[in-house]
Amino acid sequence: MKKRIIIRFKRKTIDKPIVYRLAKDYDLIFAILRASVFPRADSMMVLEIEGTDENFQKGIEYLKDMNLDIEPIEQDINRDESRCVHCGVCTSVCAPEAMYINREDMKVEFDYEKCVACELCVKVCPVKAMNVSFE
Amino acid sequence: MKTIDEINEKIKNGKAVVVTAEEMVEITKDKGTKKAAEYVDVVTTGTFGPMCSSGMFMNVGHSKPRIKIGGGKCLLNDVPAYTGIAAVDIYLGATAIPDDDPRNMVYPGAFKYGGAHVIEEFVNGKNIRLAATAYGTDCYPRKHIETYINKDTVNEAYLYNPRNAYQNYNVAVNLSKKIIYTYMGIVRPHMLSANYCSAGQLSPLLKDPKYRTIGIGTRIFLGGGVGYVAWNGTQHNPDALRSPDGLPRAGAGTIAVIGDAKKMSGDYLKGASFVGYGVTMFVGLGIPIPVLDEEMAYFTSRSDEDFWAQVVDYGNDYPNRVPKSICEVNYAQLKSGKVTINGTEVPTYPISSYSKAREIATILKDWIHSKAFLLTNPVTPLPGVDSGISLNTLEENVPEIV
Image 1 (cartoon, chains in turn purple, green):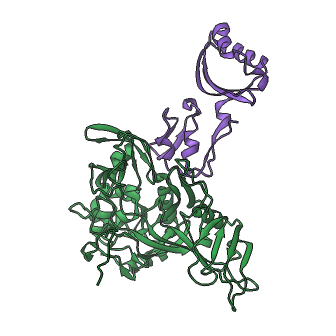
Image 2: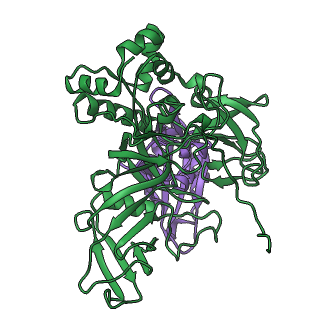
Image 3: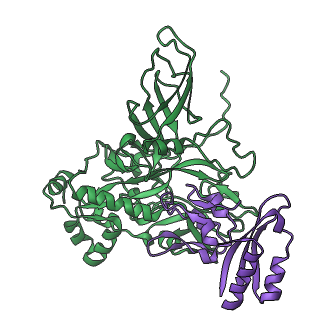
């Protein structure tokens, strides 16, 4: 299976080589989509992990044992449907095309699976409908 | 041939055939323009895009003792309003921003809050903080006031937008090497994106290209409420490039509109922040077009393939007022997601909401069906193609010394 997750570090866990362990011990393919790691603050990393279902589960267990918080990406990136006017401005900056226009009804769709949490949509959305609750 | 009065009688009797502009395209494909003209009475249109030239007049009522805000200063949620009119009349422009907004000092600026956001909150019934200073007179002694106002406390509050509903618009590309932040959104360098801003086949003025039915006094859907065409809009340019049948191929006519803001809704008036550019307001606007004869059936049934727009370089040409068009594309191409410019395929991105435009045309249709909205004969027409009006520019003139 392949999934994008957000890992949150506490100050005490930022020096642990978790990505190495995921790859070496659990044979997981990883892509670091985003990371902000600070020695004195809580840190985060957006990771795409791919592997067998068993290895994936074991990898996640390992991360939890390391006392890291794991969240699916859609929990942290969301669109306020009451504010979105489907203008399409976000689609012009979304390189992975996670935000795209459904040509049937000309509404803007959001495909979480493609999102790399770059936050550009949050910056450009004219009506501030996009929210990313990264620390 | 039908008259607007005859159509209104049909509406009152529940016999009028009212369709949206999209439906009219399909009906005419089936029936042809002659039969469509007999069958359809009204075509509803809609548009929902950023329209900077928008704002709201308010009369905030008299305080005790009285204050002459007129000629003084007035802030609404820290956004400056125009006070150069009577004592307690003010005008809040959509693009106004707080004095302490950093603007583009840290480029590109975020422009998070401005007049349009205050207007959106106001029509949604929220309290707005008013802070005003004045110089004090014998009749208006007070020099300072801070209070809260909302749509129940003020006297009048009406939108007056000097330029809305542009009849067609440029398609923006960027031939420069750096990303640009414009009122047409973010335009990627090396012509990697093309941004457009029109509802195309749903757009009000495109469906009455020669202003035969839309004129001064026309009743419209404005911001979720009812409004009227007050005048031709600023930069109204009927003489713009047109197809042989009269359809504008570039930005042409515009309208100034007015309407009771107290009856409008934040769903159709939305504050907008354009990164690196400023604050503007998404305005929802729709106009019913009476199908008086076959010519109006022809115009109202033109589709996205028939409406062409000019592709303009916003990297260099637009900012430097170089009157140059790279090529023409039509709205069917633009809405497909890609266009071909000089042999290169370029992805397209809208700035205005087609789905909201469709929603507005449908609401207007429902209003007319429910007899809540009747059509109006224009008091006087908008200046047309033969009016001789063309756009003036601002030159750095030096007056002759006599």
